[in-house]
Image (cartoon, rainbow, N blue to C red):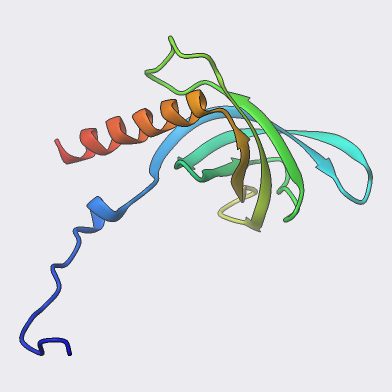
Length: 130
């Protein structure tokens, strides 16, 4: 039985955050399931974590369920090779102005790329706390 006088320690919101805000230019290529053709969409990574990215574009959203592939360079880690991944669009919605936000989950990504993302996220979080 749980002690009614014991309170679990509260996590600091900043400590529990697993993604960081970023402004990274990116071109995403996705296959439109209905048209069976590849479509290029230019935009930026707005948030990034080890699980995926939030992709923001001015052109169009990416339909949920679409297979996605992209390559981008992490800022301040220019010496690393570009991040390449295959993913899946989970959700897409219109946001402020003519912008569209699409949550993309990584499906295929190398351990080296994942390690680079982990380092980038850690560095960004460290910078936020200073």
